[in-house]
Structures are given as C-alpha cells and as structure tokens.
Image 1 (tube, rainbow, N blue to C red):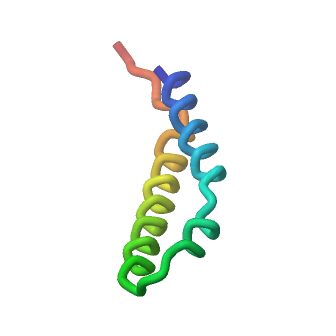
Image 2 (tube, rainbow, N blue to C red):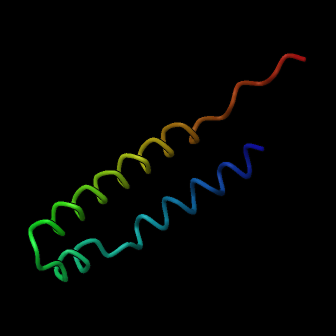
Length: 64
C-alpha cells in the first residue's frame, strides 16, 4: 500500500510544479477573480503540503 501512496504523492507534487500560476494570474482582470484565484492557489498549496507531510512517512507496521 505504501508504494501506491508514494505514487499518488509523486503525481500531486509533479502536478503542482507544472501549474503555471503566474501565467494564469496574468489572465485575470477583475479584483474578485484575483481574490478567488489567490484562495484557490493558497488552498492548493495547503493541501499539497499536507499530502507531502502525511504520505512522505512510512506507515508503522501492524502487529497482527
């Protein structure tokens, strides 16, 4: 299971690096859209950070 979790976090990390946030920000014209875009970016960064933290560690072995 840890192998599949690692793959998911790798995909999320790579996807985050490939997003052109600055390019998208240049296309925004209204202040309301800019606020919403900033909220989206902040939320994405928070979720990405949580995923990196939570799933970067190996789970503790189960004592059956």
